[in-house]
Image 1 (tube, rainbow, N blue to C red):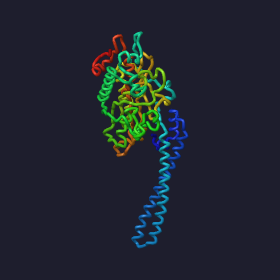
Image 2 (image 1 turned 30 degrees about the vertical axis):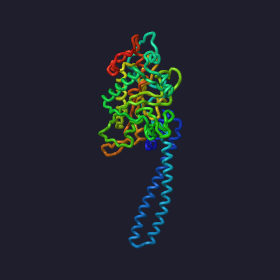
Image 3 (image 1 turned 180 degrees about the horizontal axis):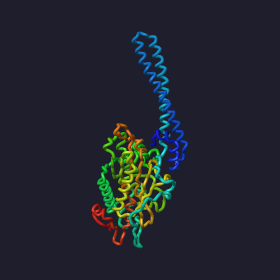
Image 4 (image 1 turned 135 degrees about the horizontal axis):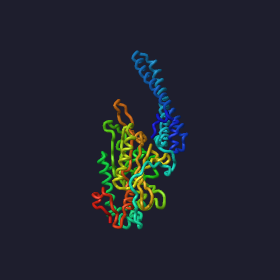
Length: 423
């Protein structure tokens, strides 16, 4: 959530940055500023009246001490009248504050100055590429055929059990999932991240805190009786660990990692984009999250990008890094880097990770703060990234490493998988 003090002091800049995200209602900025002015005016009136009440109450005691009962009674009547006015003021203030809150949460995060202009994924900026695209044999096939050939995933039974988009991993397919998850977690822990195993459902306050509500309620599975939401990513429960907390400055940065299944109602478009593991409703993902000092968050962002880049290099997958344009960014992000790996059999790039700096957008909602050396309480910055999402990693590992003898796995997975090849 944007801070009202920043909007008030930088109204035109806010409009300019919102335009980069193609926010459709810039007049809302003026409305919010006007509401803020109304709230501040009512607060001043309330505080002034409260001071008068305090003075009048004190005067009553002094008059009674002097035996001036009639004068004291007049003061009591004055206090009663002031209390009635005070109640009306407080009611107006509560309504205005509620309206201000309802309007300000409609704003997305402001994009960082380095975010390129643009509206569509085609306008994202390629930062760099790495790895080597493999040359596949002429009889190479996409991963959905390899999955059937080696009996790794059963989509039909998954659909019978639950529905389309809920794959059932089996045999070596299940083992490969487990190997990748363990490798990713070990890699993150070695980099100083503390592992968590969070709940897979969150309440409304948690979903609001990370910005899923009210922006993405249609994308989450909702247990309406209890008001719980199935998590779309580990970012939601893990970041909320520190909701309403004041972190010691000496404990910053806070580095967390977690493996969870993820659940998303929207499976995307039709055709090859959703074939096999390209896009599913339930998938496994390992996440990294950091809460950092505001002065360090962009250095940390680059560290997290390098962290994921090294991971993809170890998996021997060709990749590219994109800086997302304003129109392709999420509601909550100030800047996002996407990682895509190249699917040689499909001849297309598939997104496998997004790394974002949210600055104070999430921490303002969750009141995640720290005390600086002067004793002043300030908001931390939050960042998160996929390290990594499994389905498309698996798809590219299968497709890019297919041989006549089977699927040759990268060396870093041999110990975790217990073999060097799937056959």
